[in-house]
Length: 280
Image (cartoon, rainbow, N blue to C red; front, side, top):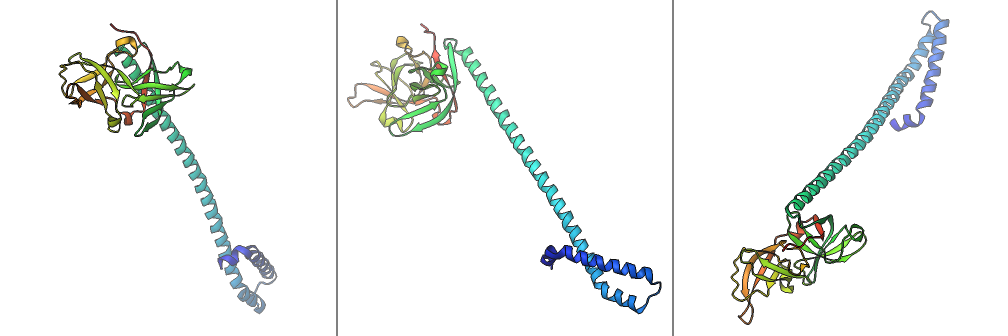
């Protein structure tokens, strides 16, 4: 029935309207209920009912269409507003993160006045395998970054050393990578050694403190920092903590396994030391 009215509703309305007009004309010329008028009323009564039902159905459909259109328009407006609010939230989050980075940079510069030129950078890629461990940053030669620049966290923990530089990117070898090596000092005892990546330890995110002086008495938990000898790297950058002290195969020399203070997997923001003052 509904499908029929959808296709022929206008014709039904037209026919009903014609019949209604005829009845109206008959009622004008007849003041009494003649048999003809009664017959006409009886015949057209179903059509009048159908007309009323069809008109009501069409009005309902029109109202439904108008309501649906209004709801769709309102839904689109709400979706647009939600998208705008989400964009505002993202922008606020970015602003908050940027403010946090600036505060960290200011604190770091206040604590380490010898680090005269720091460049904040965002990590764009983490890569760790059995052969290498490195990060990719969004800063490069356009920002004054050079090969062998040190990279640290906002707390001054050493992350690694720049190994390759592009115009707007650089690769940083983590301190656990087998290609890294730097002078180190045990903070408690002042013993000098070399902190370097070790193939057997890299998968555990550990490195080795080697070439310690004879008789060095290290303890688990000892803090190890960069020595700064030779002026190649800044002094006092935190490398990590002594996790274990061992003796080599000859039994004559001891070395330590270090746990880095920097949590490489959790890093998103770091600082590149582009220049520094040598502290005697």
